[in-house]
Amino acid sequence: MGRGQVSPPSTFDINRERMIEEQLIARGINDQKILDAMRLVPRHLFVEDAMQAHAYGDFPLPIGSGQTISQPYIVALMTMALHLNGSEKVLEIGTGSGYHAAIISRLCSKVFTVERIDGLVGRARKVFDRLRYHNIVSRIDDGTVGWPAEAPFDGILVTAGGPRIPEPLLTQLADPGRLVMPVGNQDAQELQVVEKRDGVITVQTIEQVRFVDLIGAYGWPN
Image 1: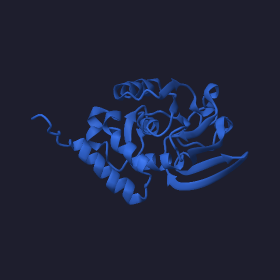
Image 2 (image 1 turned 90 degrees about the horizontal axis):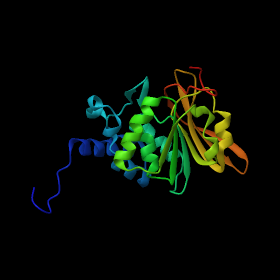
Image 3 (image 1 turned 180 degrees about the horizontal axis):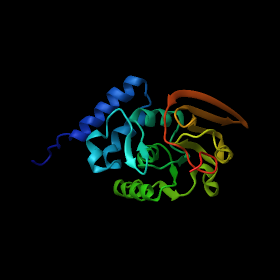
Image 4 (image 1 turned 120 degrees about the vertical axis):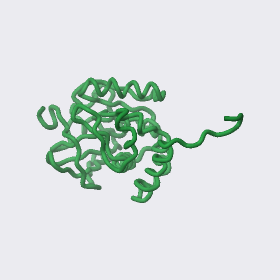
């Protein structure tokens, strides 16, 4: 390729742009910062090699250990519900593949992400390092107890479904602050947005969803 020539878009680039147009914009995701983040983060690097051809499909994908990487639209919807402006400190419960943390890391100051499965944290960390997402801090722990030493958090994102919002997470949410979590039984949940403002907590349901179980002291038993 000659000097000054631009490489043609890869299949991944084309599929990612189709994802933006057909799955996000078409469904009302209109926050340009979120669209830009999802355009820049290579989702296919967060799944196993055998799954990369399907990485930009309109569905969740298995990532091992009984966990999944969420459907792109749900990632965008949950992120939009946090109302990030770039200066926030965000806690994520359930690192999983690391993709959602990577998206958020482009929209806030720092991400603290907690995962209970050792192997998933290790793999996600390698991708974070490869992509130079240095504002993501991860640890292995029971996410339902949060990360008390780093609280309060301007935003909290829970990427697994639980019977109720864990009390420690409400305590660690800043005022003002927003928390997004799927709440319900183990078959189906409501995606709830909790806002804390002036000591008052309000809850809004924005979508019917189905997530893997939130396991821990304040979630489902293992």
